[in-house]
View 1: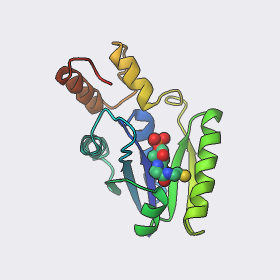
View 2: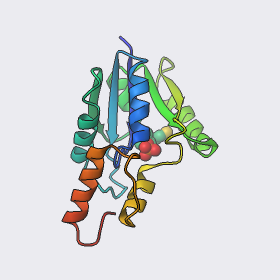
View 3: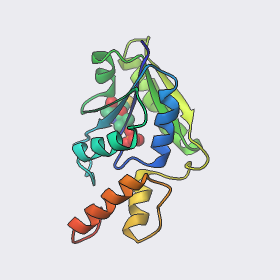
View 4: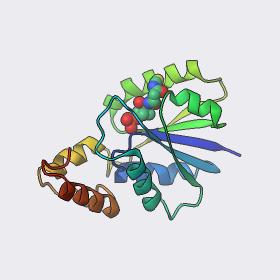
Length: 166
Ligand code: PNS
């Protein structure tokens, strides 16, 4: 059984992430979408909120598991019998960071694990979670760039905060 991991902050999940999840899910038997709980980073959504959004927007896919972890990705990979890690590449600017991570991870986990890169769809190659939050916080239109469900959660978060969404 081919089990793959797509890990990230997903704060929140965008349509770029979703496109990648849909495509990666066709390449394996099981795709684990792993929300990284990075305690040193201030996140807008809690890990539980991020996981719920991911579950809701991937409910049409039948081989997705959503999980959350902290610590090293390489340890999660080893402990969960993951055979490949998938990452999206948007532009050449991503490459430097991604190759460093892939090579460091290759040292940390056994040689049977591969990092697989999928090119982001040109429709979404310019977006990131942080850009979506910035544009949204300044009242810009992001419909079509994040799932509608995520947009509703961002609106709800804004309502619950006095200073706007971070
Ligand atoms: O969506 P992101 O934030 O670009 O994803 C980066 C992420 C979370 C996959 C990366 O930072 C990561 O793997 N973090 C877990 C900690 C870890 O393993 N660090 C060493 C990477 S070589």
